[in-house]
Length: 144
Image (cartoon, rainbow, N blue to C red; front, side, top):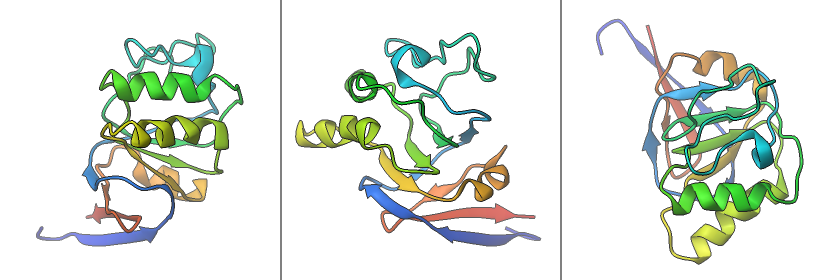
């Protein structure tokens, strides 16, 4: 790319997965997957959430936080099973319950999105971008 540079940030791998290149969706508020995301449509269903109505399907989903529920794993598992999951998840802090959904999906042999931990201070740089996520947990962006 003429006139651009590549910026790479190393993230911690929480759940391994295939490399992806997809548009980023940076949520501006924490979300509960149970009641907050419709597993049949992948739409943010919580009417109080700033990104209400947006789809998370196929995005590199950047989560500034999660609102815990023991059913979050089931919702994420259903998204993976229905092929409506995000392409990858980048979390500010690990959420063991949410990640359990990805771990179960991997055990079932289903294609599973990678989950990474990365400080949310990087998230604003992902807005309106299409990051490349490597199997080594490198998140790369082209900068103009």
